[in-house]
Length: 255
Image 1: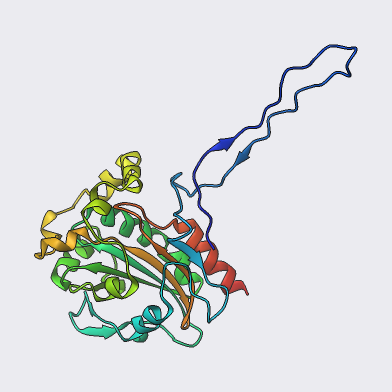
Image 2: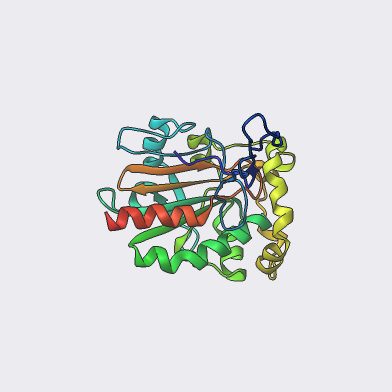
């Protein structure tokens, strides 16, 4: 399971030395246990929201096995064509690998930032034989706004206007998660990245159904039908660490 990562240092110290006749006691050097962080120095998620599956029959905590299985029959819309497609038809269900990134909605500036990051790592995924699938809440025309303006490869982008996949996976939803979850505060440390991603941003990409803006996203990694990694975003802008995703993909590809 993926660890809870929070940049912090735990130090252990001892009392001052005492002079003879007692044997001298010297304070040990401070012991630092520095936890690894992702490339933006943010928390990688909680034990309940992030996990790896080590076997085809094991599903990460917080994800229902039957729901993940049912995802294959969920229909979404291709942003490039507007045509419906089943999840199971997006990658080889025997041995193919896929990274499935579920964005919040197409009008979320944090999702434009994350989509930009996904585009940057796509060549490495391609080289490892891993298919990138990005899904957003909204209609295909809203998705095309993101694809054209960011830009982002539209053949990797899909729309889920009814939030079917999100509901199946039990991804977080609600006002508190969207605006007041502590995990959302990390976006303030990424101002430059957000500014760059939002250069051609338009709020017009926001779904017409305004209740959709309360949806949170997540990340899945599959090999065939086997779920290797799953994560529920805790709040707005709380995205999966892509260095961890790349590590998983490379490990499996090499194996």
